[in-house]
Amino acid sequence: QVQLVESGGGLVQAGGSLRLSCAASGGIFSTYAMGWFRQAPGKEREFVATIAWSDGSTRYADSVKGRFTISRDNAKNTVYLQMNSLKPEDTAVYYCATLDSYRIPRGRYWGQGTQVTVSS
Image (cartoon, rainbow, N blue to C red; front, top):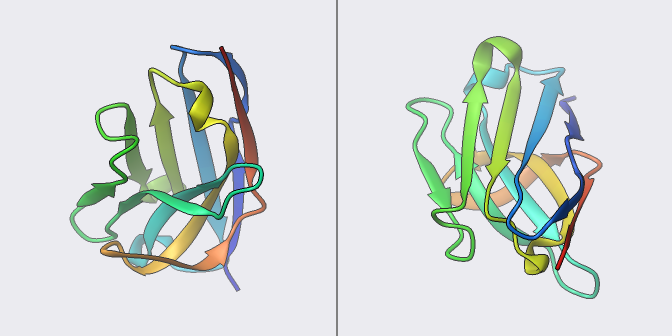
């Protein structure tokens, strides 16, 4: 059973930055594609970014391209989401998940989420 724990959320002003972390345990992290997703109040959960397990290939939602960067450190069993130039519409609970493929943003194991609030 894979366990994922997100951290790094908080309150930030528009234009600011945050870095989210997701620590994994209970599996062979280096073989999992990983993804970040978010869910705003009253909205469905949406894909944010994914990263391959093999060569670090990435995909991003159009709404975050150029502002967010996903990365991973297999030695630390951790995936990150660097979020820059944050906007109020980025406010959401952010979740990390393992994926069968970084090309298919469908999570298998999920973390509990971390709240990101961007004030205007």
